[in-house]
Image (tube, rainbow, N blue to C red; front, side, top):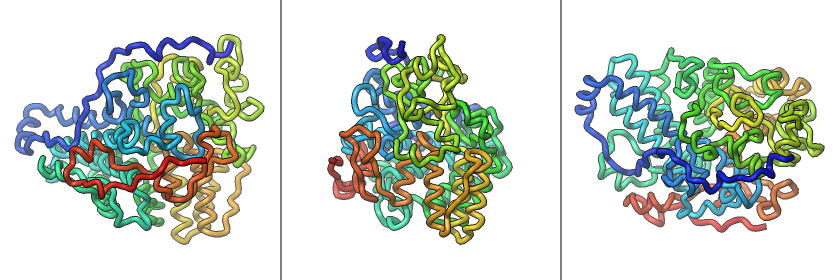
Length: 529
C-alpha cells in the first residue's frame, strides 16, 4: 500500500506548543550599557543565554502568527530557504493541496501585504538581528574578557548573516545596484526615535556594514573553533565563510577565494560513499561548518509537521511529503544536465523510478519507492531523522554552511580573478574526488568556469536556499518551460525581472516613518504564461 494514501488527521489537529516571542521592530526596548554591565556582574550566564538565543531565533515557530494551525510554513530559517528555493527554477512541487510554499512558487507572495512572503522574511532576520544586537550590548567592543570577545564576534557575524540575506531578498545584486535602496540598518546603539524613523540604506551602505561586522568578527574569533558538538555556533571558519559569500557578491574575486580557503580549513567534504545514501540531516558530519541543531524537544519538532523534514524529506513517517504526496522534485531539465557518472543524479528518482541511494532499501517488506509512493524526480537527498526510513520524529538538523560551498566559491573566485588554471584545478579536484570520478572541466575562459561552478552549485546545494540568490547574483533568467513544473507555473523570467525580489512589507511601512511608499520597490505583476 502506498504511504501517500494513508489518512491524515494531523492537518486539522490543534497542536500544543509555546511559540517564539514576536519581536516587533523597531521596539527600542534596550537597557543602557551601564545596566547591562551591572547585571552581568551579578548574572554572568545572562550573556550566554543571549548567545543561545541567537541560535534559537533561527529555528522557531510563531514568527508571523502564534496560531500553529494558521501557517505551517512558519518554522524559521529553513522555511525561508524553502521559500527562496520555490521561487527559483530547480525546485519543483505541486501547485495545490498541501504545498505551503505554493505562493512563492507562483510569485503571489511578492505582494507586500502577504504575511508568508516579505513579512515573514523580514521578521525572521530582523528578529535574529535584534538577538545579536542584545549580545553586542552585553559584550562591548572595549571588553578584555576573552569569552565576551568570542560572544561579540559571534554576534557581529550573525548580524552580517542577517544583512546578507535581507539585502539579497529586497534588492537586486550588488554589482550594478550599489546605489539602489536596500534595507534599514539596525545597530545596538540606536535609540527608539532612530528606529522609528529609519530609512532604507543603499546596497553599498549595507555591504559596508556587513564587511565592518565581519572584519571585526574575524579579528575577535581568531583561534576559536566551535567543535563538532557546537555547530550551531559561529567560529572563525564560519566567519571567513560569511565574508567569502560577501566578497563573492561584491565580485571581489581574489578575496572571496582567499576567505573560502580559510573557511575550508574547518571541515572536509562528505565522501562519495557518504552521499551515496540519503543524508544532509545531521550537523555532526565533517562537511558542515555551521547549521541549525534541532533536538526532539524543540517546538518545531513537537508540532509534528511544522518543520523542514515535513516539507522536504521524502522518507519521513510524519510529514506533508509522505502523508499527502506534497513531495519536492528536482527540475527535469536540471536532472538531464547531471552526468550519469555523477552521484548527484541519484539524489533524484529517475524517470524509471530508481535511485541507487534507495533501490535496495525496504520498509515493512515493501521497497522504499513503493512504500512512500515516490515518483520520477522526487528528491532522495535529505534523509529522515537518524537515517531511519519512516521515522515519525522530524528532528533533523539544517545546514547553513558546508565546506563544499566554500570549495565552489574558491574555484569561481580563482578563475574570475585571472587564474583560470587554479580555478579549474580546484573544481576538478573536488568533483572528481567526491562526486563524479569522470568529471573534467571544459572551461576555456573565466566565464565558462563560472557557469560550470553555477551548475555544480545547482546540483550540490539543491534545496538548501541558494538557488534564487545565485540567479540574482549571476543575473540569469529563470527557465521553467519544457520541464516538469506544473503548467500553471511553467513560465520563464528575464534576468532581474522585478518580481524576483520582495517589497518592503506593509508592517514595516506602517511602523517605520523613515520609509515612504515612494521608497519601496516597484510593484510587479505576477508572471503569466
